[in-house]
Length: 612
Image (spheres, helix red, strand yellow):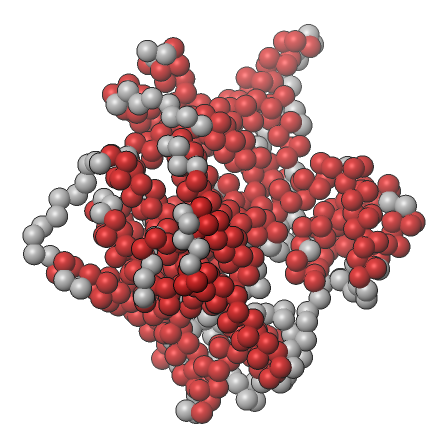
């Protein structure tokens, strides 16, 4: 038995893990004790500060230590699990990312972790403790996904007949209750801007996906024809939730066809019907929701490309087209899928007209629809500022921290793109929106000059650029931080709609007898977030960590070619990093969150086939 797996070593690791999960970066002041010898004084301060840090935590630390020891003993001694390949490296990476996030959450900089000997000690403890936690979790997950143990099924279950229909009815039936309780639906500022484009209160631009703008606004128009914009909003959230329920029901059906474990199918159904990131967003008509539905559907179809026939090929064409139309970055995702599938059919010598047509048609149809909407509504191209969140944040942080190093020539180049005198003051570590609002470039030459300065300044202070991006995205590796954002009701955008003069034509309202119910529902979702286990199932960091782990499971099992099918998920991960923010905007991660059950099922399917 390896030394680190001895009972003594496991107990020490358990203490470190218990300390890691309860530790923060606050450093208490040590009272003077009249010690004049420097070494003695340092020892006294260290002991006193550590004692102050764990004051009142003794009982909790004891319980956690025993729980961790029991878990580690079960994994490494009782089950005698071997440490799987890559798990140490992945666990160390995840631990470092988590601890860096603690620094950013505390003081918006990673350097706070090393500002004193006490903080350096705390950093070391957190890294070691979370390394053990992630290592145990990764190996336990791998064992669970490769175990043949399963739930016992009863004969004659109702789901054995027409399973897709029953899956759909269960999911949509539960969601329908949430839809009714939040009638007519929640709204966002983006929805208000879409309506202003469609109904002529503002210039129609590509700032919002133009297809979603027309689709959503047309439903509101239907409601107006029936005398109530509330009807239109409710019809739209019914429509989008029905689409999502159908896609998720299809994932469960596919899991059943792949004969993956019943425990995974039951757990997936529970997540679909209870996790707040699912039930809490069915009433929210955001562009990301329908986009996520077709992302998941297309990803699932790519997992079974060889089996696509008839209706499923039509489903590919439809979902591929809508993926491109429903978000401005959807085209990037589909092009990646297109290239992967094209290479696959060439390697398999299946480059037939039918297959090629299925792949190409989404690009053609989406282009035709986009051109039609652009012509019909006179859509104008928006500025590229939405794609430049990362460099703008880096420049703003650079000016804030190293403004004295900026030359007059550099100020001029930056000033032609952003308001140089404002960006340092409006800079917010977690979102690029305040900096982007100062964008005013008038030509491509202005942007070229700016990027020359941006590149030059990177070499002067590269750590500043790294911190600007990391600070904004550390939440991606922080499963202990809530991201609870649920727009309460349909009145959220009233202010912006009133400013645009839309209120006389369109004015959503909550029925008088339902006032307060939306607040209760949001409080309910918040409670679910903070409950054990259920809350973790609606945490962005949890799903990002799962993506890293599952990816390396494929590598460990030698399924390297299948990793190309995960490219849409990893591109989504990069898009999140390039987005304006992830904290308070979990919707950017919905494609990864909603796709995780079918990804895990696909991984298990491969293991089942290998065992035969």
